[in-house]
Length: 121
Image (spheres, rainbow, N blue to C red):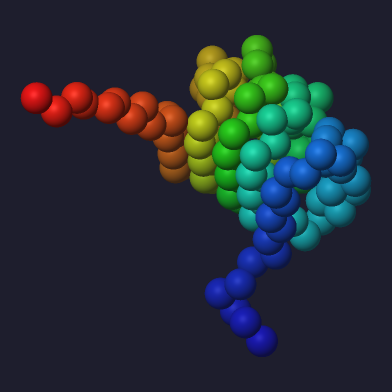
């Protein structure tokens, strides 16, 4: 019916969300292709490990995932279809693991903006 649409999922964090919710998402890996997680400050490396089981995941957008450290992105190496990764406002995301994401064709990395106030004369 909609040939250009891919199975996508977007989750915005609220006080009750966490890595356990990602484990539930990982139980439906056969169709999930696009995933956006916004404001998941509680997301950790183990949460990304759950996403590593989503073998058809093509696009992942992590915005504000401050809890991802160390080799967090290495868990995504199991996502053999992952072509696009967007990291926005992530202070630490295990960047050294990016070399293991061999099918990655697009990487967006956006730093938080620093707004400077200039005093007028």
